[in-house]
Image (cartoon, rainbow over all chains, first blue to last red; front, top):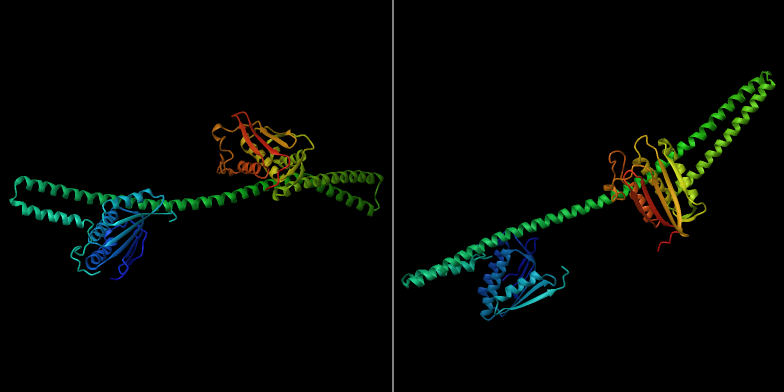
Amino acid sequence: MDHLKIAATDRSPDVDFDFEAGVFSLKGESYPEDASTVFGPIFAALDRFFSSADIRELRFDFDLIYFNSSSAKALMNMFQMMENAAGRGTKVVVNWHYAADDETMKEFGEDFSEDLENVTFNLVPSSSAA
Amino acid sequence: MSSGDSESGGGFNLFDAEERVLAAAARLQRRLTNADPDTRQGVEALTEAYSRSVREQRRLVKVSDRLQNQLANLNQELGKRRAEAEEALAQLKETQETLVQAEKLASLGALVGGVAHEINTPVGIALSCASHLADSTKRLAALFEADDIGVEDFQAYLATATDTARLIQANCERAAALIGSFKQVAVDRTSSERRNFELAGYIAETLSSLSPKLRQNGHKVVIDCPAGIEMDGYPGALSQVLTNLVLNSATHGYDLGQSGTLRIAVEQPAPDQIRLVYSDDGKGIPEEYRNRVFDPFFTTRRGQGGTGLGLHILYNLVTGPMQGTVAMESESGGGTRFVLTFPRLIADKS
């Protein structure tokens, strides 16, 4: 599959999905006017990826500063996809990056991880020099 | 992206998973048509409740998105406004700086006006004496040419020449003395040069440059300063401070036609400390203005020539170059007092 790269805007995150390497990253802010313009292509690609590839190892890096409720729901859906894949034997690692002083973003990570049994979910604080 | 994805059906749906569960529930209900009514009704109720819950979730997501969007817009607007406000503040500070300079120049202008007025008198007298002398000389020369000169003519001429020469000399000396003292004040005012000066003499010089303005309104100035206090500092600052105090009293302290007494009293509480109390017996400053008199642009005479910078400049000069403090005491109807405390010898800047 082609590498999916979408540059960030002031309301949508930077998307960098390297399907070959199994390394994915979402970075920045996410509060788009219309969630489907941002997450439509992402889910279309992920659906294809999870249904076709025989994947051994995956790594997802989330480095989000701010997201709205639609984005939170979309993230939940993504985690569900990963959980399903992990249940089928794929090794999935999620790194949830948050600014060390951003308690809210840390709590979001903790919330998301609660629903995940087979995915390895790491909370990664970073020094708050955004 | 390829459109061969049956799950997403081409359109993106946040509640895809929930809808699939609902579809499965509908299928389950159809299969339960023959089940016992309790089970059927139970599954129906559960499905209905879940469906409501999903609808509620959609609504909440939509409402919350909208709020977050508004918040983001407000934040953006706030950032923009803040940047604008900061820019306006920077501009204002620049303008203030310019106005402070302009005010200093304006008071220098008043000083120059005072000098011109003051020198005008002796120079005018000297000039008319000189022309009177010239006339008399011409007349005497004519009589001499005509060989018609008498002893009385000559005696009268001698008397005129003696008188006018004395007047010319006295008035030129007076003008020279005035120029000398004004020159020092003006130089100090424009340069911020530090030097030694004698306090009482310097106060007297500064006040004499202001006397035309004060005489106009009939104000009297009383200076009570021990002689021989040798200062080391910025005389220009002191001169500006006294000028601003006097002009402030003259402008605000008295009603038109009313005249008063301005007092400058200097004490030396310690050998190296000066306490200068300036007071007038004018109207005083109303209570509500007292906390604000040193604020820049505070004026009760906006549009009437007041810039609101006079006392602000004074404050900056006393607390800045003079390294001292200033406090104002006033009672409505009881005059205004400014108490300035500053060192006799200023400290070297570190």
